[in-house]
Image (tube, rainbow, N blue to C red; front, side):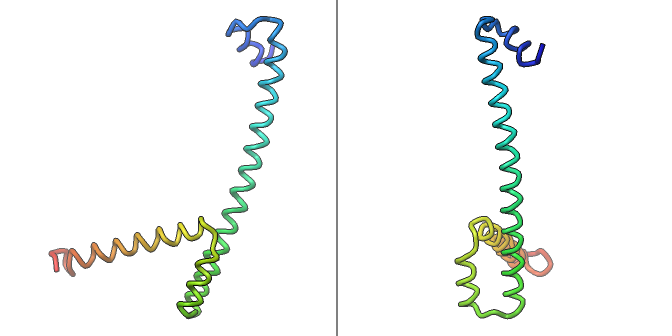
Length: 109
């Protein structure tokens, strides 16, 4: 007896409906596995794209690319990449504000 069949018996599903529900649940499990595999591959592709975009953008900054060119490049980056950059900029901005507010020795300005 399969675990699905056992579960259906414990749930008191009518015996004539067991076969139908076994097939439905098995198909749902197979679909979920396929979607999980697809999602894993999709996330991996997105990670590679983001990693590549971040590396290229960083290289452009280090090479001394003009601000207008960087602004155009930034506008063409994917949403996950821009979110990462904005997050890092926000953190650095907060760190600088906290540093200035606490003064050189942590005693205020």
